[in-house]
Amino acid sequence: MKIYINGKFYEKEDAKISVFDHGLLYGDGVFEGIRSYNNIVFRLKEHIDRLYNSAKALMLEIPISKTELESAIIKTLKENNLSDAYIRVVITRGVGDLGLDPKKCSCPTVIIIADKIVLYPQELYQNGMEIVTASTRRNIPEAINPCIKSLNYLNNIFAKIEARRAGCEEAIMLNSEGYVTECTGDNIFVIKDNNLLTPPTYIGALPGITRDTVIDIAKSKLGLNVKEELFTTYHLYSSDECFLTGTAAEVISVVKVDGRTIGDGIPGKYTKLIMTEFKEMTKVLGVKY
Ligand code: PMP
Image (cartoon, rainbow, N blue to C red; front, side, top):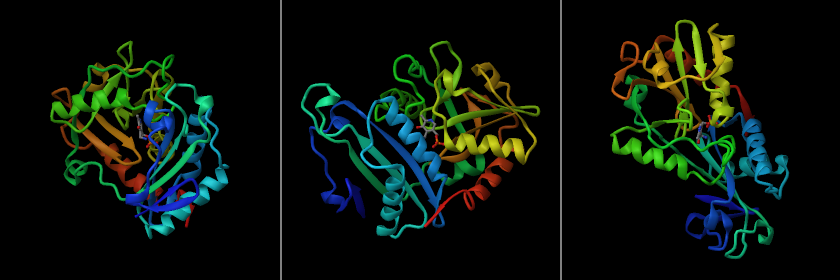
């Protein structure tokens, strides 16, 4: 495996950064998780835009241009001979001293790792998954805005620990007012009658790129009435269908939430259609290499 760090490729054992990098010391940095399918990097431009927006919010200046980063990602995929991959781009604040001050960091570190990923067991894609609501609330946007994909994922990790303790793979996170926001690494959707609901990102959710793709599919191909609005766990329990979206997870059905069976307890008809249409999108939307 060849890993890109600041313009050079290193073998996995030699791909190392300084212990003084503020990405390590303070979680000061941003990242992206991107997928490629059959030599097409799925919605690469959207991922790059989100990365630069996250960096801007942190006042972190990425030392290369968007076009240079795009080329570096493609080069990493080619170096590793990967046609289907999960790509992790990490930008840290860079090497500084032991204080917090980002001004003392010389130059941000750019890291690109390309690998394979299987997030959830295949069986869950066929039968749907069970999830729970975590007691840990999503970060309030006034503190660390969940729209920023930062290296500071402790909030999500707390909830992930709760999910695993409950024997589940994922957990729902509510915001401080008790509204459903998203899961630890996935966005959430519910379907009731002809309506597809997902929380608006301003209440504390990442503007997911899979989420965005699914909204387009639901509007243009399925004629569903898409609403970005607030809802509670009550609306989730009484929904007809529920599913999660994410780059690694793609689209996965949820059939049980906090012990309540959703709909008929099997992946719903709209969810299955969305899963199929999403697969089709991965064949056409993106940058070829
Ligand atoms: N929410 C969180 C907290 C995430 O980490 C992710 C994964 N990047 C998502 C949602 C899904 O976003 P995307 O579809 O862009 O991968």
